Length: 93
Image (tube, rainbow, N blue to C red):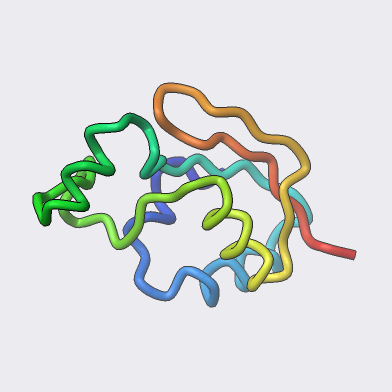
């Protein structure tokens, strides 16, 4: 289980590739960039918009899927809760 970990890692694709070697299926929870309209507005005008300034990324569902795909992973199921993506992820066949 990766609960609010991935957003702190610089080279996330390499990290996810290693995770895929350890488990066939796991849960990932990450913060969403598009959790509300104010976040986009702050980003657009150059203000700090991240939940934590040490985050390397905050995701949209599309950017999350794209990053997983680069690591040979895909979403089995996902939900959005409290401004976060909660996803069960597995290796692509």
